[in-house]
Length: 357
Ligand code: TXA
Ligand code: MG
Image 1: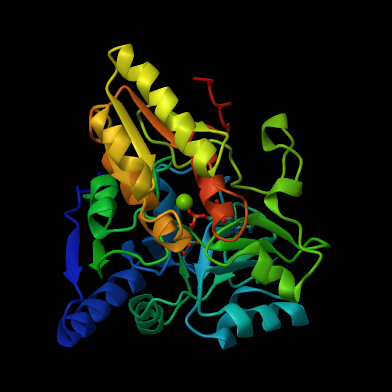
Image 2: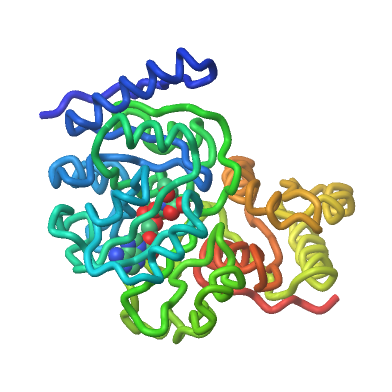
């Protein structure tokens, strides 16, 4: 029988506190414990990537199926050959251009990384995060860290320490609290083991920027529909990041998207439903006057602000006792591709045609 853990919140708000917190967290990791830590994208749930027993604890804490591979985090480009092998020149070019940062490269796995990290596969996802606390932690631990997002399986990724504790308090040894994450959606996952390379998950580094270096890169829209039951890459489930409340995401963007949410909200309010909406700032006012619970994603001209707020807004809406949540889609360019992808998955993998007025 294992004792229930009490999760320690380690503060990093002064330089001294940060040094002490990182040292304590690193010692826990070396002892095979789990520690959540901030990255620029979302909080990760870290374990020593070279310790299969520690890595198994990640799957248990998250209730994540072993078929969903983890990302390995390193603190220096020179550490890439510790976790991957047969590294093509283009991987080094990508690393020089986008690391540290929100880009995960899928490469052949080194034997130093146990297969459980890679869901039994021969490839490994690896990235060098930009967050200084993440880098300090990996360096202090002295080992690469396997870390998925620090949420329970199927919940929205955590962008604050409180989100992590909501999902994992008592299941992990500690969390390094460094405030909210700045990017807000997970890293872009680029598969370099297929030709041409494929963007498996759009994220903080846009497809347009990847194509500057690799013009042939396939985007997620160019893959066969996942719901067709075709086994693609691991961990690419259509339903993911799901709120508990039913979420409808209209297949419309901009003005048309705002109108679709208004029409849907009016109908649902008329049917005596308590409605929540996830919208940009300018779209909020009219909905509030209809009695809709609103979470604001920020100015419509700022996709970076929208991705930063997305998961916190979804989590907040999900605690409001609503019967129905409404949102609209985003143009699939720049960071909009990541917004589209996450909202579609949060809605169970499908967008809903707007209703006419
Ligand atoms: O920004 C991020 O990537 C965050 C922070 C903590 O670094 N991590 C993260 O991890 O989002 P996670 O486990 O929630 O998502 C990892 C996903 C898998 O579900 C899978 O889709 C993909 O990355 N992935 C990882 N390794 C892979 C591999 N070897 N082959 C294909 N896809 C892989
Ligand atoms: Mg995740």
